[in-house]
Picture 1 (cartoon, helix red, strand yellow):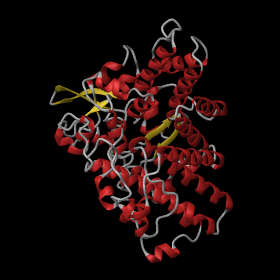
Picture 2 (spheres, rainbow, N blue to C red):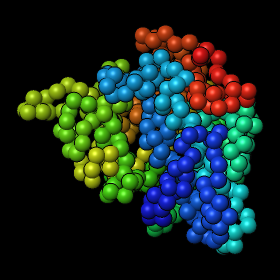
Picture 3 (cartoon, rainbow, N blue to C red):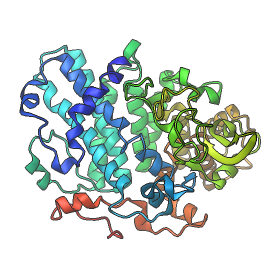
Picture 4 (cartoon, rainbow, N blue to C red):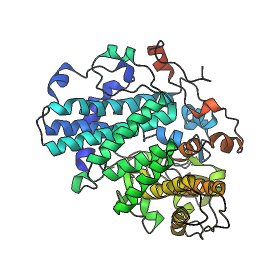
Length: 479
């Protein structure tokens, strides 16, 4: 995906002035504002700016794992020196001035600004009409993904659907109800799915596809408990035959096997000193391991598997050793210090410059979403939902679940929840799964926490409220 990767630095330069947050966005420069979007190459740069946002610290480089995994019972921070902001999230002591909370908000809106710029400008650009349609669909896909993240994390959020060209516009924005945001997310994913290609070749491999849009739309439906729509959309994906489970779970995460048949969408990374490498090799290594785990640069100690997560795997589950390393050997001595190993690069170019892509959506996820939707529509002690569950388990080296074991709708729900936890471990799904199934409080409090219902959402960043206190109000429960 060279055109995406090698133009990311242009995107980062163009949008670097937006770091203070969407409420203070202004034209980058008068020259750029008037003359930059002239032809197809310019619009490609603009689309790539939206893709570039996925690598921001407030999106997949840190925030999504800090929230999707770190808040949940899957991972934890064992050393405050790994960072006070991420430690707050992990301990449910998050304040409205938390740096990750602010960066997540700002960086998601930076990406949304980039997508809106494409959609607002592309209509007047003289270029190939097929490419114009595709670029617009890619922008809608990325905007929908970013808004889907935001609405699940903050609840009601400002719904910006046009380019921000005047700083004074920021003072008019208020928080739209989550229901309105979901309507727009559904619309964007639906239109993207209709216009995007099923696959790409050459340097374009890794860009958003119709299957990726359909898969994320299915997750949007599932999140809203629209069971029939979720079941229908996952069936479309399955019947198309584009995707399949890989024979080996380990092959999913091999660096030389990116964008494989099980992958619907990945955040693309490329090591080599371009500023496009992934940071997870260092982020997830134990902080005191030196370079033993990373080979280059120290570990940060983020996203460390909890003891509860370690126990979550059944005996003989092949996924456990692929997902978790139990420690490392230093000076001939084994140090018990579990860490996530899915994203380890044996030969990174430099510290935080590794080659691992980040899996946003896999076919296994699609299958498990379908099993969940079918169970909610009509529980059965046999049939497709059970076949799907056991198909996932078979690859993991586990025996089938039987109708005697899963003899009620409630039992099947828990079986799907468990399978999703171990199959999709450390891929940013656990916290959102617990939210979606209304299980977050019960699960987390059963494991020693004492969380309240207001903590199911993040606080609105204090900076946003201070910029526009008449329009942006704090989520209940936070100061």
